[in-house]
Image (cartoon, rainbow, N blue to C red; front, top):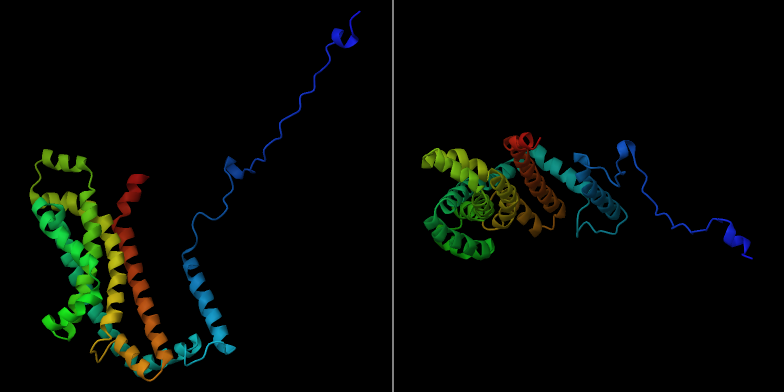
Length: 288
């Protein structure tokens, strides 16, 4: 006699595997984002605004002495007085003239050297090594020789700014030239483009992304070099204003000078970014 459990087809219990928690899907079947894809442009100011607010609070309660660092409100009032009196405008124009003259010369020389080294083996062999050597030597180390060769006036300052600026422009433009697709070069040979037409139609457009990357670095390098050079035998400029304020312990004027340098650097970078977006708009069209 068989057991009843053997005659009947009893269901066998099989424990279910624990289900893994699935992330909830948003509309359209896509996973929800943890953060917005792109923050608004004004979000970049969040960090600086918080820093200034904390700085002002610390100065108000007495944690930061005015002799050590002036409060933002004090520096703002001082800057307004200097602007109204015309003193700030004169020194600003002197600094801007040095900076942008050195920037223009450095960018022109950097692009010319990059084209010569990127489009010629002889140029690459004779130029690239020298630029890399200059890259390894800080601008401060060249000041004594520059003073002996060019004097201690404006020529020395503009020359050193230009020599600092050409490095990032050269390196990034040269790298972009070396990275041009070989198919474009073969196409230029097939249609028998002249040397000038090749540079105009293939080399320069191909080098534009690298050039703008180098230019963004160059504008910040330009102002960084100016900060140092305007401490040397100057009678006008933002650096001279800060140097004189240091002798009298006027930290509010020093803060005003630092803010001006920062605003000019960020403003120059913004102009380059807008120019880059307009000049390279064709890349978005091709991608779409």
